[in-house]
Image (cartoon, rainbow, N blue to C red; front, side):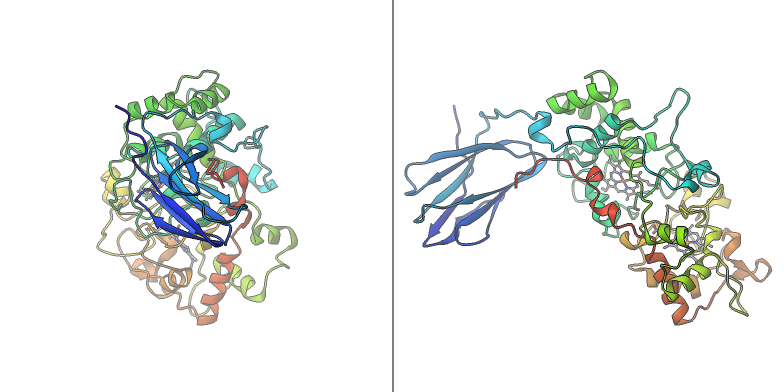
Length: 458
Ligand code: HEC
Ligand code: HEC
């Protein structure tokens, strides 16, 4: 039995205006102007649809057959002849003829982008930043970035097939426009469940001396980390077997795997490495701060420079000691060295952080701090996303740090008996926020080599 045209949408053109006369859950329509109509299809199954038009609702002409890649498709149609015109989109389960080839599913450049050799400032090649580099270049787990591997990683990062019901990708919770973070306090998984931590930004995640990933450092390497959200029951809910089978059915994946690893066979090892290489390619080095490093900060406003002096503990505010944010947010990547820290968010500890993984009570309440690069893009802040803006973060460090047994030394005062209270003036707090805003690299949010490669029509 053939069941054709189970889902319809009709669009009517009446004397120059498009009107929507019928819709259903999978389809939405928007009028753009009198003669152009835009049609959007949302469809998480990567399926093929037939678009037809009619001037009398009786005889229908097929306009095109199209495939909805990765969840949504958008197309504009023009009615140049005038008069009435109706459109409908049919889904036919037995007529899924369009294959996902690399060229029709993806908008990849003819020659791969350069991921393997990013232009880095000179200080990235010497310590302390050299020691922060977590790219494994030698040994059995070596995973140096190549352009073909990172290209595959880019496709995987944006592909909703990685979640069991094909509704979310890594990028759903790590959005480029927000510095690869999630603007929601807690991310929403494939079935609508909420996590308990905020998705941090991924800017310069390649540089972190302790190598570990996640707020509680439970992933020992980035290659270990990338398979975890896929299998996490509230995030993407997949099994690795189901994933390799699903990807093996897509011609573009066998192609990209062959280009990356020399074999079309889809492996979890390949998925993990390609994703890790893409994440390591989220490199940002063109902020106002980076420019300032080359011109002695003459490009900074007075307020930004005051904030810089406060951040690096270069100025005293008697009777208070220097703020020294860089005691923990160090180097030009603003990450700690060998230590993992507690910044006095709360006591008793609600989230045990690193100690919850190791069981070591001296590590209760300790958390990884990701780079502060692009911090202005990655609100809300802290592992639980408790602060909605940077002014709240700075106000917290000024007067809200809570003394606790595991408070890290830079924030301990009075011979170890209480927390440092900077009591910054309003101007000083504004200056510190202004400085944090100089860490934004606007190229990151538009960089095409880090953006969604799927073909959504248009
Ligand atoms: C449902 C939302 C969600 C999805 C989907 C998701 N993440 Fe995350 N990601 C998070 C959250 C939340 C955290 C912080 C969790 C924690 O630390 O416990 C995180 C943390 C990370 C980190 C750690 C960064 C650091 O500096 O330690 C990396 C890397 C990362 N995710 C990459 C990925 C990749 C790659 C994918 C796709 C395979 C992915 N994420 C999918 C929400 C998500
Ligand atoms: C003792 C070490 C330490 C010092 C000093 C310190 N921080 Fe932090 N900072 C941390 C830790 C640890 C976290 C993560 C805490 C958490 O989420 O539980 C953090 C988080 C942050 C975040 C949020 C990061 C994100 O991705 O959500 C910002 C912004 C920040 N700190 C700015 C500052 C500023 C500004 C100063 C100086 C006034 C400062 N820090 C001083 C350890 C420190």
